Image (cartoon, rainbow, N blue to C red; front, side):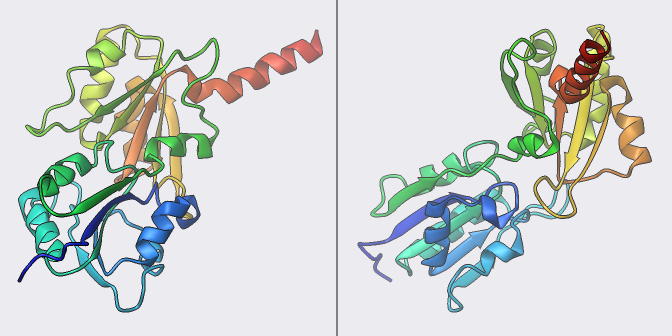
Length: 253
């Protein structure tokens, strides 16, 4: 079939899950889509925004389990772009932050397809929904966003560098690497650093635990925290408690 000259592909970030955290531009793209290829972490309520005649094709990847290979997703993107005018590739969080969205952009590059990238709120910003700022003056000088699972299955080597900084460390897809993460901090004499695990950020079933980074494995097992989750490490995790104690001490004095 001859490719439609007006085909548009929208690579859309749906945010951490709460439909109200969608951008207006993302909402409009979903509302007008003829086809949506969506991931495992998409809140099904978001799919209800689409027209009833919209074709919805699941191309998810269960953590460490069954998944649709990226090569097949790329093939499906081209398949639908040859047959429809408005195709949405809907991804959790932000497509360009550990979302492989740019790989999908490259798939349609140099073709007669108009591509639009629509950013989404990253899941790491769910930290703020749990009273954890990613940065704070005098406490954190920046943010390291790292993957806990590289293509070869290993933990990012940059963690050893991040440990030595004065910045907050956010680790995506790291639940199977908690032991290695904790060990890295202990080896750098920073096992007492505050850490949090946030599961299902922004959703009604959201859960979180806080502990010392050295205790990540034990605490996650005790509270049965699993996927999907982000790991936040740094002094910002305990900032609210620290400021509360400091204010109480000033009041007493």
